[in-house]
Amino acid sequence: MNRRGRRYISVWWTVVGLILATLLVWQAARWAYHSALEELLATGGDRLTLYAGTLRGELNQYAYLPYVLSRNADVHELLLGEMEAAGVNAYLEDLNAEAGSEALYVMDSNGDTLAASNWREPLSFVGQNYGFRPYFTDARQGGKGSLFAIGATTGQPGYFMSHPVLANGQFLGAAVVKVDLTPLQERWREGGETVLVSDANGVLFLSSRGDWRYRTLSALNAEQQALIRAGRQYREQPLDILPFETEKILAADCRIIRFEGRLYLMLSRALPDFGWKMHQVVPLAAVLEREQSVLAIGTVLALLALALALYARERRQKQISRRQAREAQAIQAMNLRLQDEIEEHMRTEQALRAAQDELVQAGKLAALGHMAAGIVHELNQPISAIRTQAASGRLLLERQQTDKVTDVLAAVTRMTEHMAVITAQLKIFAHKTPKAGGQRTQLQECFEGALTMTAPLINELEISVVKDVPQEPLWLKGEAGRIKQVLINLIRNAADAMRDSVRKQLEITVSLVDSGAEILIADSGCGIADGDMDELFTPFFTTKEVGEGLGLGLSISYRIVTDLGGTIRVRNREEGGAEFTLRLPLAAEGENES
Ligand code: ADP
Image (cartoon, rainbow, N blue to C red; front, side, top):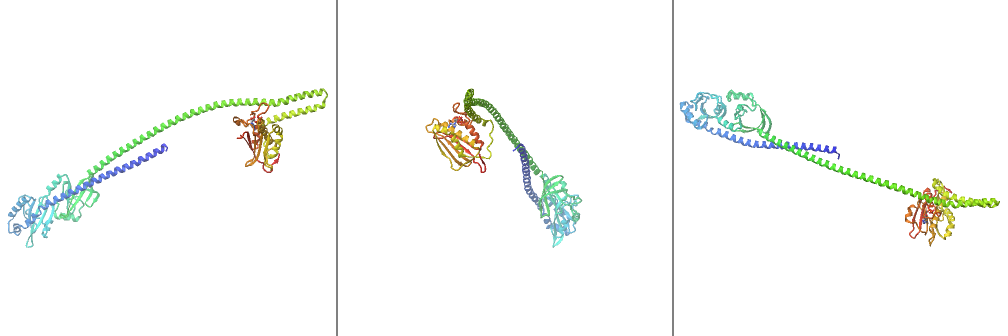
């Protein structure tokens, strides 16, 4: 992979890593948030149960007082007008002090207060009419009544509980106890917690936070407002709505609210025996803080991991670069070595070539010398013979013996013909012989001719000839004279090789093969020395004495055979002697006889 591809993949991995890390951190923060919230919900629920219990306990400890008063004989007499209020006032004062309630009082059937525990105080209930209070109307209807309200006379809030005073089923009045819940609120406030109690209309009448007291959880409708006003429950309090927003509802009695820009968890619990609802409001700050700290720690850890990964990648890249540099150095060193070796080879080759050139030059000169000696020897004889004949011719002319001159001239002519034969042999190397086009020759006839020509030599050396040639005529491509020349050369060489042999046998075998006629000419002669095999077809190569051979026979034969499109090969036979194999192409139908 190239550098760009690697870079692309690493960027891709970094992006994927970042996304994964972000998801992981976000998930961890969510988990922290939810677990902290769960904890808060659990403790909040427990606290709420506790607060509800204390409230219920606080109120229940005074619930018996109206009943006790309603059964009191003095109270009955007072309501029947059979007794003065003073005695009952003293009793109420005493009982109130003992029970620890805010006030105890007795109202007649119109709602006028006849006796009260605070009869001595300037803001005494005695003489006041509370007939408008729902707890009175409830009692008048024969039931127990209860209400939290701000005192119509004192302006002090409290919880009122009433019991009807009945005589023979007749409603005489109501006995009432007022309980002060301010100390309870104080305890809640001192506990540092926001605890609220709302009535059936949603008015927060008890609150550990002073600024939330007498605020409503939802807007009051006209009917609710009229009812509250009729009962003078909260005096002149404006009963404004508490300006909070519900952020999220987690359950029916559990929600997250936003107040003055801060988030709080608001847990509610119904108090069905009073028709109220108790609430606890806990700041969410701790939960959010825990979420944020997990987020911060997670981010730091993720960044650390990323930095570590980047550092590791950088290190790996550096290692790769170093390795590549080392490899490049090694390759460069190898290249230099190769270059040196190539130069060395070139120098050796040049030296060899120079040596070869020198050898070739020397070989050429040797061959030239050899050839010159051969030609000189071959031509010297006829030249001196011609000179001799010319001298004798001149002598004969001087003696007027003209008839004998003709013989002399005939001899000269023979000599020149012999010389012509020698030069004709050399001519073949002077220029390329034209290819025999469209000519054909019968092989058997060529053999007859060649054997006739070499007969004197064969006879002289007493060589036996063994022939295995097919009867039917074999037509070869090419001119008869040239093929005959090849055969003569081979037969003559074979005869020369057998000159000193005991057994002298020349074998001639002709057969048909795929590519044409195969001619084997084998002898029982001395064979060819291994070192000479490669030189055999080179012009002027000869092992014969000067004057016995020019070293042209085989090279001329090679030239003729390849010109005809054939091949010539040689090998030494195992039983001794050499064997030449000729392959010559057959003539096609329609080619002319030469
Ligand atoms: P020349 O016969 O004039 O020497 P050739 O070219 O015909 O020239 O032959 C080259 C050489 O090949 C001969 O000198 C001889 O040493 C060797 N040679 C050719 N034919 C034979 C053969 N049949 N047996 C042994 N040597 C041979």
